[in-house]
Image (cartoon, rainbow, N blue to C red; front, side, top):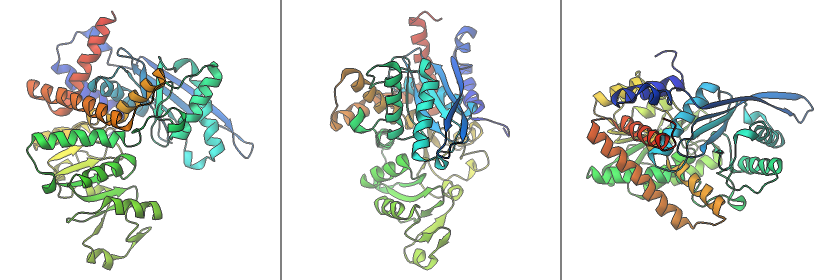
Length: 428
């Protein structure tokens, strides 16, 4: 599929699952397109006095089960097709873990690395003003995504409250703890994924100490997942970031990697400066330098794509050596690769289940904002574990009952729950 887009890849999976369910045309049409697509221009005055505008989007896919929910990304490639796909996946994801939200996503097509802190704040506030009629604690609750931070969420909440003359801690999630955030939010995506992976390995009667894991992406989700797995006795053999990665068949210590990444800006910082590496020292330590592409094909038991979408394709799917692929990133596997992996007996735990810990703890933050309460870290952890494992068990049951892959089963569970809500509301 040479001209595929993130949304066309979503539709391929969706159409495949819809064909397995006995749905009427009336039911199917609700999944064909988002309910609303808001397109705006956000304009700011830069520090040098010049004016600049950026395309901005908020796509609201389906709110049958509750307010639209989903992140806002600031990225040069955050176009309508990408945001549409992510909003659609979020609708499935919130339904799979059975939390009372629909799916949405937002984006500003800009490069935040080229903006000063003041300019970034102006863009964040301008986005809220542009989308003011479309967001709200009971309408659509944004959250952080690529290149957006708790500080940006705080500016957005503040702008919303000023514009609406209201006190609305539940309008945005992913805020700083001191401004209505939730404990456990930072590690939530990885923690939810870790709970699922532990359950999966237990059910397969495997021993973590005998399992090797490779992780592509050492940002928030990837680094936290590496630490959780390392602490639980798994052997992390490879990690990478945007500049490449390191591989050691004997295992590496993610805590040490993190320390050097903070110091040097790259996971290979212990051995490399930029692209120049100390090969002798690497040899002595049994470590080699790998590209992001090579990491995917390394010998390991569990492969965790935790960075970009569209990285496991029909080109490399036959070279993957892992038994399990665990998608912490959104959309890392193409439909064509899925078919090859299924044929080879490789089990894929899909993004709409594997990385749902983040939105689950966002739901806890929204609940705390609504009630004015503050949950303990222990309560966040135990509720996250309960909800995420209920989602996993529902998907596992559906996969067995309907002879589906885990991805098909997750979509099936999500679609059925959304249809149920639509029927109750009289939409069908």
